[in-house]
Each structure stands twice: as C-alpha cells, then as structure tokens.
Length: 294
Image (cartoon, rainbow, N blue to C red; front, side):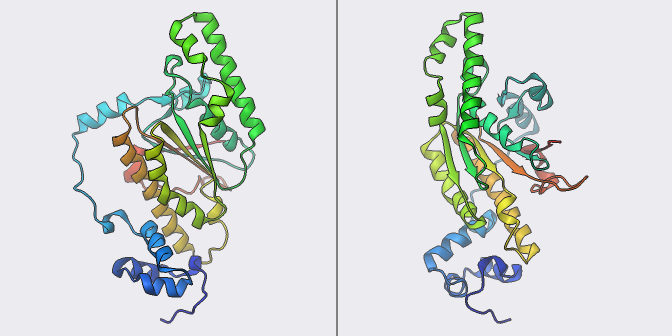
C-alpha cells in the first residue's frame, strides 16, 4: 500500500505503525509524517511496547511476598470517613486508579482534593508527598485549589490544638498554603501527542523530585476524543499509554522507599454500563482500580 506525504500521524493505519515498530524505519516514518528523524525516534520510543525495546529479566516474587507488600502499602487519606472507607482506607499507593463519571459529578474536584491530601504530614496519617498534575482540559481552578488547601490546613490545625502533640506542632510550622501549592507540579497538555511526549519525560522528572507520590491525569480521555478516524489506532495508543503508566509506577516503586506513586486516571462514561475507557485488562487488576462517581 502507498502512503501519501502530509497525512496526519493520528490517521496512520495500525498495521503501518506495527511495521514501523518491528523494523525501526525511522527515516521512512519521518518522511511520511513530515517530521524530523529525531522526532520520529521519540514518537516510536513512546509507541513501541516495552518488551520490544529489550528489558532486564523479570523479577520473581512469591505470593506471600506480594501479599506482605500490598499490606504494607500506605494510602492517601482524605479526612472524609465515608470516602476513605469506600476506598479501603484511602486512595492506595502502588496502584493505578481510574475515576469515571458523567460531566459535573466532581471528578476534577476529587483530583484537587487528592493533590492536597497527598501532602498531609505522616504524623496526621498522611504520606507527606508531592503531586504531578497533568491537565488536558484546562479544568484546574486555582481558586478552588486554594480553598481545598486552606480547609486541609485548618483541619490539621484543629487536630493539633486538640491533641497537643509535639510532632504535629512541628509539622504545622511548614504545612501552609504556600507549601502545599509549591509542591503541586502542574503541566498542561493540549493534544494526545503532547500527552504521549509528557509520558516520555515523566520518569526523569520524577527522578529529580523523589517525593512525588501522586500523578494525576485529568483527563486521559479528552485528547483522544477528536482527530481519530481510525478507532483501532486510538485503542492501540491508549493501551500503550496505559502500559507506560504502569511501567512508570512499577519502576519508581523500586526507587522510592516511602512507597510507590499513585497514578490517578480520570475518564468518562456516557451511558449506563459503560464505565470509563477500561484502559487496563483483567490480568492487571492487582495494580489497577476503577471507581465510578454518580
């Protein structure tokens, strides 16, 4: 089959991409897509499955070790007893969580809440981490984020006044509004290409900010709703993005002693029984969770 120059990358048929992934035709891909060879290499590095790049021998664990590892994982508490109880003690670390629901149900507000809650000091039951917030819809409102942060600081202050513990008093000296806002790292992605590119540089950024324990993508569905006539290609890109996110979580779980990162994925469903994008297959359920807001 012949391919015309100037064709949009997002409209390339999946078999053509699969061929490129197998034989590494960077020159041909750059010519067909109208991009430089360096850009073609970066795009293919994102699209190529991990097992084709060559990886180290898979690590082996016993079932007992996996159980102990999961029981030892901390959770991001929200100070909302009903929500924490429904989540099994809070939003768990070392898992990929997908939050889905119709527009206006409160998914973005929950993201902002968690971006603040992940920073709650350990003496209050938190994990004392930082947040990487990837926004694809320009939906983050700083005013609402400030309100959430002030409410969290006030709640911790009331706990300190009630218990009068020295470690909590010391923690409250730095747990302020400015401290919270300065530890939410914000990135805006306007297209699926920018989102894929962000996944490429995300591991290096996390390596430089080792306290990041929460990565939020709000929302992962939005960049893929348009400019895709080839639905099979969209599905392929979403699956590869999901695999990349799981790889990042697993990789930094080994690097961060305090616990793994939490990847919070936000998506949508438009009808009854159609929950989210269903990014993750059943054999990955140990690392993923799906919650529906109604």
